Amino acid sequence: MEGDDDPVAAALEQLLAGPSGEEGRKGLTTSVPEPASVLQLRTGEDTVAVTLAAGTAEFDDTALRQLACTAAVALNRQRAREVPPAQAGGSAAPAVPMPTEPPVTVTVTVTVTVPGPGWQRVEQSDGCPSEAVAQ
Image: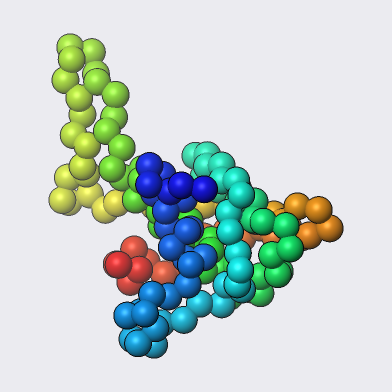
């Protein structure tokens, strides 16, 4: 799956690849079992559905939370960058919130499925670290 055009796909690919060498040297780790790869990804207003390759080991609570929070942050960032459609008269509303407005963060429900005799789990992004912590 190519994530170049889809920020959610790109973020999940990076998570599933595990920490880079530099991240590992800084002590960053992941609970996501290897190997794990995304076969299909669907996003909605407040949902992300991820289908992983058959045979992917079941995620523990921490791994599922990492995946849910990664997907939610990427989806919320994508929404913040979207340019609203042009209004009547041809002018578009500002694409970026005014500095006095806090960014809108939507709680995202993430469903992770492994096909066949695999598994399925659902997690919500409420309680994920704040955007400021995640950056």
